[in-house]
Structure formats: structure tokens, C-alpha cells
Image 1 (cartoon, protein in one colour):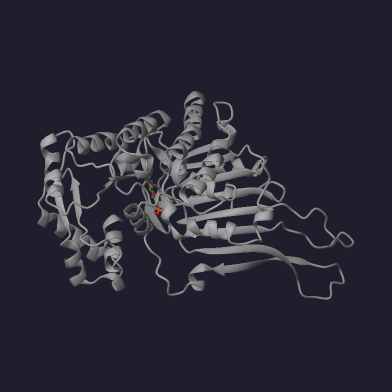
Image 2 (cartoon, rainbow, N blue to C red; image 1 turned 135 degrees about the vertical axis):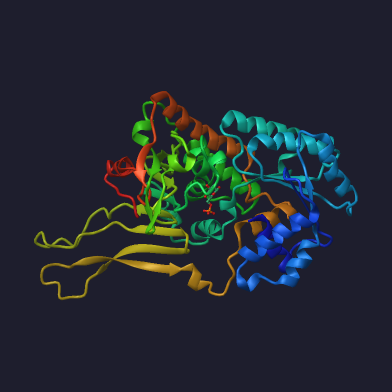
Length: 468
Ligand code: BG6
């Protein structure tokens, strides 16, 4: 994601002049070997209309590589030598490492004299594995950088579709007056994936779907859906509103987790007609890590009191499908009844599909054509907007393109502030601790299904059902 994004920015002339990319990792190789591997990947993954071998070659001229082991001061020196021989311009550091390495890496860079007061640092989620460890990372980073120079990356915030939620809510008069507990019955947020472990065994096991997806991406979506209108589209105003929502999430505990959460783990099955193995087989040992989670979140504030937010995400589900469903309440009185034979009214539903295709669908009631001798018959019809069609021809960028550009330009609006991350962890910790204290286990589900059957019960108990 990172190199194709940088390449795309380069192709569009959006990178600053005299830009250079100094990559590093533990693998020992020289510049040429690294460039060759990046060149190969760009050729393999860039879409046909973006691939240009001359441009790839010119792009690779700005790339160099240093093998680095942050515990070895001498190896970090390689970075400082390369930077020292550069043009002396500002530096942005991008850490795509396990969270336990954020602080030691930043400290090693500081010890090698690489950081300046204007150096910006980006960190890929997850920031820690719980509140305590995220505080440690944030404290260590805070000792070296001002908060305005710390960029916590959640790539969902770079997605066009997620930003479109702001446009939908705050660029239209239509929805905001109804966007509250008076008119909304419940909200569903689903992020479904068909993939399994994708070779990420060492990262994923012990982390699980709750920490991997809900703690960050899903809570960011939830906070954008639920926040109060910010006064301006700037980093302080937007993040102030998001953090208020995150802090209003009702914590769970050992008693409530059993009714408010479901954990699942996929067993062998079939996804899109392909037979796939189970999680434990991919892992090579039994594990209690959840690859699916369904939650009933409650937001204790004036706007959302009593409106459940149902969240679910998982791997090896039937479809790669991310969407938000807003279920409105029924009309307060139906005028259509006739000799007990009148129309059935369905409450309105707004479905915002984020992935794979982007569209918005509003289900409304309309009259079926006819003479209505037995009473007016109504039927649910969809008002559909395909954003792909509406903006045909507009290139959909990789989420990281925008985020990298914002990092270079110093705009933190689409990055996660320290208080947001910590509020996210506080809620997640309450669930993890509830699971631990109550001994709640991951239930099996055959790959290719929407999680264990208890996930269906979680929502149906309240008289609602998942939109599959
Ligand atoms: C990552 C998770 O943050 O997001 C992965 O670690 C997940 O497990 C991925 O597959 C999903 O991102 P996207 O953009 O494909 O929806």
C-alpha cells in the first residue's frame, strides 16, 4: 500500500521537489536489491493505466535502503549518514512496525541525532494492545514529539467512502434533524472480509478481531456516524467531537459481555465456492483468538440514549462487504389500514455501502399501482445512489495516498489523536476483561457464514436482524 501510494503521488506531481525515500527494515540487502523488489511489486500490483516502466524507474531513483536493527546503534548510524548526506529538508518518519517497536525505534532515531523539532512521525495501528501499553507508547512518543507532529494512522480514515460519511451527514439538511434517538431505532456497522489469516499468523493470534478491527476502524466509523456536528472541518474540531462519542460508550463487564458480545472463530468451510481450512489449522494449534466479533454498543449521551449500535466484523465471511445501516423508527400512526387488509408499513432504512462498491440506498414506502379496492397496498422501494456512477471517471485513490500527503503537509485531521486512541482502548479493555473474567470463548462458525448463530441471536433478541 505504501509504495504504490507514493508512486501514485509521484506520478501526479504531488510529491515535494527533491523528495527522497529512505526505506529500512531488518532484512539485509543493498539499495539495488530493494529497488528491484519494489519495482517488481509495483509492476505486479499497479493497475494497467497507472503502470509506466519509465516512470517506475524514475520513481525508484529517489528510493534507497538501509538495513536497521534498532537495538544496534551502529546500524541506525546508516540512516543518519544517509540523511546527513541528503538535502537537509524536513523529515517524516513512517513506522509500520509492531507497536512494541514504536518507542525503541523513535528513541534510537533520537539517539542517532536524526530527529529535529519539526520531524513528523507516523505510526500504523495498532497503538499498543490495551490502554496501559498504548499509554506507554503515547508517553514515549510524547517525550520526543509534540502531539501535532504525531500521526497515528488508521487507514479507514483515508478512505473516500469514510469521508463521504461527513459529506452525507453535514452536507445535507435532510438527515441531521432525524439523526438521533427520536427517529432512529438502531444502527448496524458491518465490516465483512472473505480473507483468512493471509500469512499474518504471528501478528493476528492473540490479537483477534476485536483489537484488529473494532478498536480502530469500526470505532472510527462509529464515532463519525454518532458525533455532534463539528464547527469546522479541522483537526481539533473534528477530533474533539469524535472523542466525546468514544468516551460515551458504555463499558462492558463480566456480567454484560455474554449478552452484548459474541466471539467466533472460523472452522473449515467454503468461501465463494472455494474450500478453505479453519483458523486453528492455518495456525497449526488450537487457539481461543476470535476471528469474528459481534457487539451491541450503547452510547450514553443525549442524542443516542436507547439506540443500540450493532457492530460485527470477521474473517472468512460470505462477502467482502462493509456497510452502515441506519434503521429508522416506524411512523407513529398508520393511516393505511382498511378492513384489516391494509398496507403493511416498513420503517425507513438507510444503507450506506462502503465496500466493495460505494452506494447509498434509502428504503422508502411507495404505493403499489392498483385500484386499491381492498385497501392501499404499500411496498418498500429503494432510492439508490451509486457514487461510482455519479463520479464516473474519477480515480479512486488508495487510502494511503491521502494520508501520506497529509503527513507531508502536516494536516492531522485524518489521524487519530492520543485521547481518541485511549478512549477506544478503554472500551475495548472492558470487553476483553469481561471475556477473561467470565471465561467467554470463541464459538466455532464454518468459514463462509456470518459468524456463529449466537451473533444472530444477539440482534434478534431485540427484534431486529442483520442486513446480509
Ligand atoms: C487492517 C487489519 O487494519 O485492515 C486487517 O489489520 C484487515 O486484518 C484490514 O484485513 C482491512 O482493510 P481493508 O482496507 O481491506 O478493508
